[in-house]
Amino acid sequence: MADLIDTVAWVRLEGGRILCARPRGKDAFYIPGGKREGTETDLQTLVREVAEELTVTILPDTVAHVGTYRAEAHAQAPGTLVSMACYTADYTGTLTASSEIEEVEWFGYADRDRVPPVDQVLFDDLHRDGLLH
Image (cartoon, rainbow, N blue to C red; front, side, top):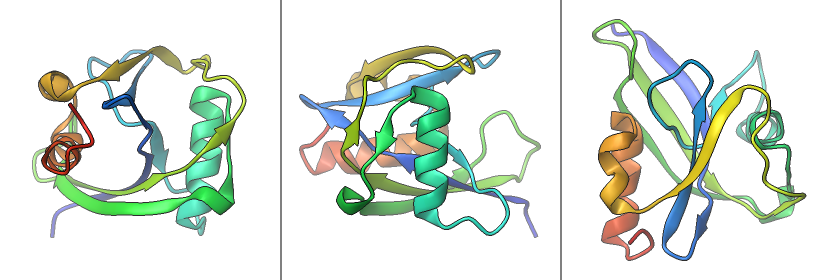
């Protein structure tokens, strides 16, 4: 049985582009979010990770599930899979990269090759639905 990394991600779309972040020391950009800690719910994980990475507060009443994606994990042992539960949500505050994030960028569909496989599946769905240009 393959190892599975359980993650939650924030899908923030503006003007046909999606928010992506590159953690310090990493070579790829990721959809903001991260691994669940202990018995956290998806919402608790989403709120914590986005606050840690981008210094904004997710508004829980606006959270909506986009989909859950699974693919081979980037920069992990062969056969390791990642499951990424994706949510849209509004926020308060100013988007700012925290100390653990090297840079933040807005990506279009043409940037698909700059994100890991599981994010690419999300990019494909968003592009197909006309949300990512």
